Length: 545
Image 1: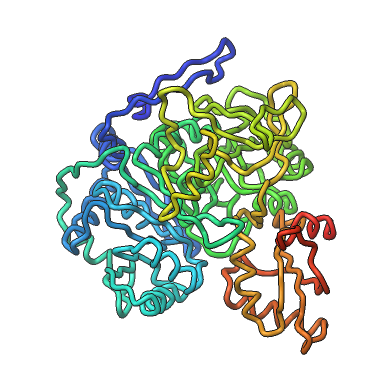
Image 2 (image 1 turned 30 degrees about the vertical axis):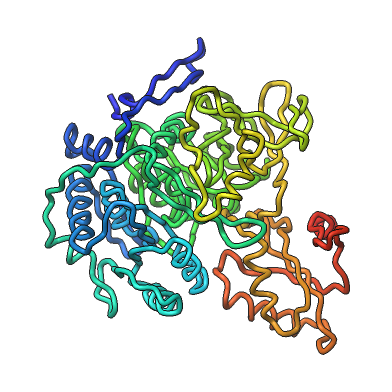
């Protein structure tokens, strides 16, 4: 029996499909002790992590290993003065140390803040200042330590600094300290209502929002792993995601370990479809999850046979029906789409036991009560577009739904207006009960599997001396789903030209993380605006369609 069975009750219909799912967990549930350490106790040699990199290095870590290393790192943190409630930014790409660090922080009640290595110095400064972090742990490679040091200095912020694997001036070596630390650790008292995890997610206006999840969050991913990804006990699940993104929580640790599956970790920087299929076959991956961008690349190549692969899932943006069809033709596996947000866990999906319908987001997770509502709050009829909202059921905590934004209670109250959680996403439901995505009610750009808020790019654009006014939107792109396009009004001293376009793109892209790069520029003399002076991005999208 997998450890997850201790924390939930499942009911199935006559066709064997999950009908009801209720969580039942103690007030002091802690993923580190009650899942990782419990598996280590019951099955110490059970695989937890299968890791390899592009240099040909590989490591396999059992749950006994993960317990020991997480305890050791927890003691390193204790010795450094970190304590319950502190916050730690972790920029560790796909290095295996991430998993030890995450579990150690959970055990101590210290808030984990994953971050991608693609962040710029300004991105890091914002996260440092808004979180008031007590430590930063980063990869020693590709200039990451230099960015962290610069950010800390510019923010005038004092905190503990660690790197892994290699010695770097200005940082402590976490691996060395881990090896010298004790593996004995006393249980820290934590509550399921304590903040456990913070992800920064892009918004349409203002800076990224710090999304907080509590200690019950991992349990909500049981449904994600078992009934959508179909990760198996003693199987090997491979989600293509860097640890700085929420998708890593969806597919690289919590739900997978709860249902007894090991996670496949391929430590790479540059995406190459053939490498992924090689890893799948070399290590015997049984379930696979990737953003649509990966599948688009895969179907353009000659996909080899993958005999061990049983299930494949995707989420993050729309995927063309042709890609679904071609992947299934090549592999015999139906792609199962799913939908959720950084603020939530899986809300809608093509679940186990249901036929995967091309293009559909599937049906509602039995964990949630979800409705489609119009702007006035009324239910939308079948076939009509409405906003996806979560309606809390009476006296029932919405496990897996975030518990707040960092220092932004007004925003939190706004998304929970009217007693329901507003996702900001539009969809419609057909007569068979299937949901179909229609787009964002706001202007989030989803490019290559990443979420980008226009404000983040527009802020940098406005720094160029030629730019008087600008607006950024996402436009259709065959590989990325959406590409970033900038509409620009120039000052009187500059004339629109190809040379100026290249100059502005180079100016901005040098300051932006790669996934935020501007791909297209259009010079205009005026912007479509509302009566209050706001730029009507919907009109700009129509112009670009």
